[in-house]
Image 1 (cartoon, rainbow, N blue to C red):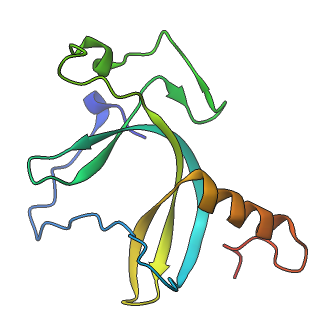
Image 2: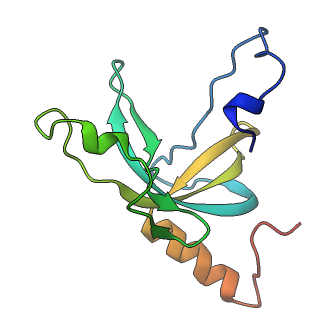
Length: 131
């Protein structure tokens, strides 16, 4: 990571690339997990287009997987009448969506995460991100 005051260069002015998220459909969904998994707490905010987008909870420390109440949290400054949802725990990882070959972010809720961890702990399967 680079501090804002130490950042160099300018933003790529080429084509804008939107981050794609993996969404599961009913039935079989085939993906290839890529790399490690990242723990996080997110506020899920609805955009003006009606889509739910994650906003990181800045109080959550990924290294310790605990909260640092001295860290800034802009959501605490918002009146509860405007936004009162609590952050939700999840994991995120990169996947290759086998239906279209695209790399996407995959927000893992507890059920799916637990199932993957169970497979990873089984020596017959091992780490699903290993090639």
